[in-house]
Length: 458
Ligand code: 4AD
Ligand code: MG
Image 1 (cartoon, rainbow, N blue to C red):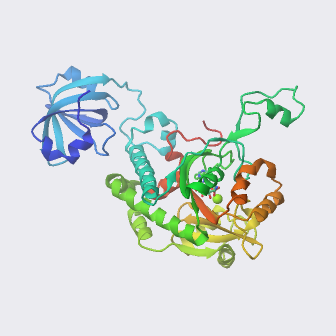
Image 2 (image 1 turned 180 degrees about the vertical axis):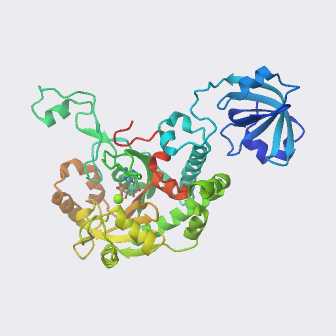
Image 3 (image 1 turned 90 degrees about the vertical axis):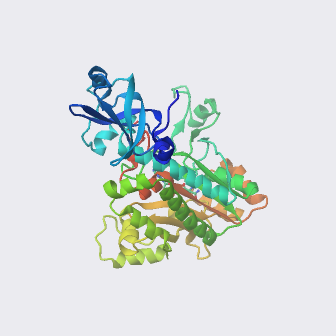
């Protein structure tokens, strides 16, 4: 269908001025006066709408009546001209209607609440807010791939169906094709009869597969969906989210922290450059000052403290936290937010967490109590990255697994990486949807995903 993208018309206005153009799109708003009607359409290519000017001498009232309701899909032809208000517009010669839009279309002209829009995810992409979210989501994805490409990482696709619970937090969604019945005497018997002949689930992290790939390919990253059956009904948890997980051989914890900071800055910079109109929108309507905040992040060093220091800071804060702070207990969101938002006021790496609250694969520090792990905390959200140097010593790794009651036999392939030519290596996982929240200032993870899946909602 021959037509010109609205984005092209804005980018190359001079090229098209005076010529006849055809544009397609959905009516976003329209108004009528005695002699002229104004219709703004959007085709999803540009954040700006294109205004169509209908001279009622040239376009019949009857046709206009059908074309003007918000949500109508049209194809319009006319002379492309410069205009003071919008930079350019189309003087209609003809308009064809692809699909009419009846009056019960939920997105009428007034502003809607995000709660309401969450109830119509299939339509909310036709609002400015979500158009901006998905433009930035796209730009951020590309910025991530660009970063790794430039830095010599191979993009690998890890399996989504897996037999191991990497994080060991018991948040695996089960994958099965057969219902349980009373004939099975044990769970093992039931699993043996199932599709894979063993218990399977959806991946909670691609890390273990990523480590195995890196142990040969050198530097890899994964970027895929991740599933967690967490009963956390918060603004930052989704049951299905996207995670970026680089794995780097010949890198210790300090190296990976340096990489993580460089990576975060690079993807912020590229995304801001790619989406100036959308970022201006977020800055004005969603999170006042978000552009200044991000520029501040680009121009300063991230903070770094140990977990032990963080506990001291929290204890000295004089704050009444809902969850008490004690060395050995995990930091809660309220603690993370205090540290990064109020105390440091910038992104902050907290390093050397107690081994007992972290996963089995992390490198054990010499103190015998902590591991070479770090979380990157950012203001407004809390944790966006979970990161560690991996335990490269076979014996120590097996001991950590046994201590956690893990079935070591289920991990022979993973352990082979330590048996055959083990090397120091490190990696991290960035929650993509949380990163998007951070860049845009969007306050709820449900408003970053096309069809969010959270506990109780599918
Ligand atoms: O800290 P996590 O659990 O780390 C891992 O999965 C490691 N295997 C990563 C690695 O070293 N390769 O998760 C990583 C990040 C978190 O920091 C958070 O940003 C995000 O994933 N995340 C979630 N995002 C949205 N909804 C959830 N339920 C999330 N759980 C974790
Ligand atoms: Mg974590």
